[in-house]
Image 1 (tube, helix red, strand yellow):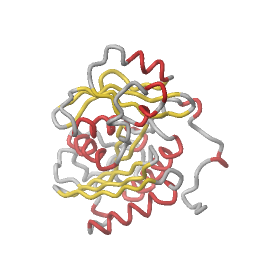
Image 2: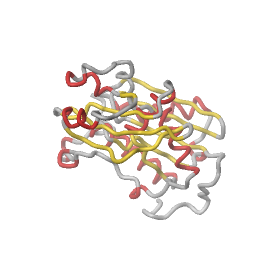
Image 3: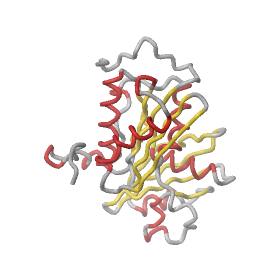
Image 4: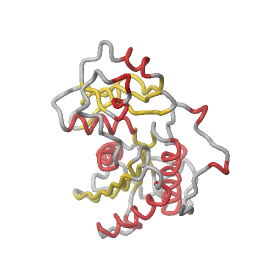
Length: 246
């Protein structure tokens, strides 16, 4: 097992010929993606209540489809949030189990950044406000700016009422995307990009860039991001079990 804070001796972040796995369960989608050198593969299912049952089998299915052995993996990333608290914890658990077993460095990828990047890939806009339904009468949001083929966060990611998000949009000149747009407060906005959710194949591009920048590290360096920490942790008997089949 790899102690926290210590990377395998063979780890070389400058290596572009990486073999990376990414898992995401931060929304109703359950998705995994894999890259090896210039090739990539992905699987995505709409599984709002079965992330715990499907995420690990999907990893195995994807590795088999690509003909990649677990021993070939060099790093693993995950959708670290914000998003579904339960889904993020499931993805984090899968990440930790694989990372510790194979002594792999890890990385967390922003769910909001994934929404923004997918939008930018399909528009000529340079700025996107990614908005996700946080439930409990709130939304997550973040402003992202095009950065070459990727995008970068402008300021910070937020959680708050739709009214607070609307205030942030007052002087915003760009696209607005994400399932938060389906809430009544945003009915006056174009709904063209309201169906976009975080997805592993988009996160894979961000993970590859993070790998090249040397940002993969120990599990403790890449914790989940809930933004709403006061309600993030449940009692032990309320936690999802990866073994439960109901």
